Length: 424
Image (cartoon, rainbow, N blue to C red; front, side, top):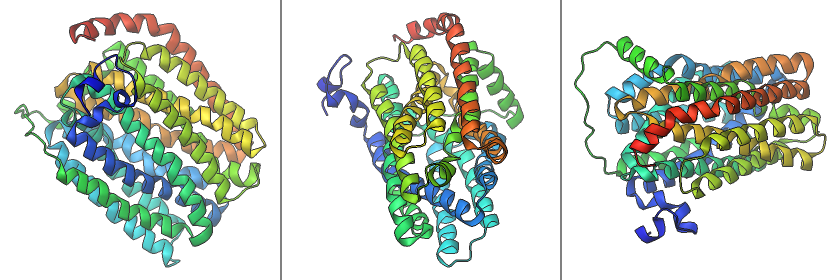
């Protein structure tokens, strides 16, 4: 891909894919695409397995809670480690551990020995691994992209492969679960990790320059916390991401309930619903990748949050599969555009020596708040029903969009000098 096709203002497919001219990111992109298809296959398989074994919406929430609560507890300190240690090495270790865990779980399912507590324990272990993997992965982008102006495009393209996998993985899983059972999906996920591990090992990473500090880990954590939440734009972005993770993301946790009990379908229906959300999210990331500048992302976040809220509420009221797929498309679009836009703004305005810690707070907001939402949604669904639960969650997200929109002019005043300094 020539620089001519990647110049700002250029049009066409080459401009959308401009971050792929960087060799390390190209390797990461390819490995992640394969691995994430397996990840989404496993997520669908585990959701269906838990609901098949227990018939309990509450236990669906418990499993997700167990997998995500470690991120809330550990991610801020993992961010300190990401600023201290070699990020490339951390990622190789976390991906290898994830592969081993998936292999053990697949053997338990395939042999028929699996019990619900096994799934909860495995989810908790994976959550611990992810609490180190996710902030490190987010802060590792800067090492894969030589030109800072391509950073936003790289983040959008990374989101696009997450959501390509989010479409392909559930669709494949729905067919495989019906034909061969959940264990096969989990085994395929274990094998798929080899792609991203090989990609990481093939990268050419320049030695990272670290400041030699002898500060205590809590001192560095406090420094990162004050830096992140002391700056109004970062604080506002993380608040909105936290709110959406708490009230909006649980729609995916309750998807098996809608697929089987509301829409009277099976694993195929679950795969179609999650695939539709994935297509919506993929559409959103293609839109973000096609943007020539990050300016104006504040307004994009407002619109995306409104689309998410409307999609969730309409989905909860639908009783037809086709309509449900249509509405969940907008929920997926809004969710991913919101998260990727917030990520891009944060990555642009953060100082490099605090990048790991800031991205750990983003991870805590994105993934760390989700377990509380999952647990509350599972409990509420068992009491008032899944549809009413999503109506409440969607309404809360809409209120968050209004609040963010009201504060947007003040946030722009804080960010504009940083953009001007960086030539954006």
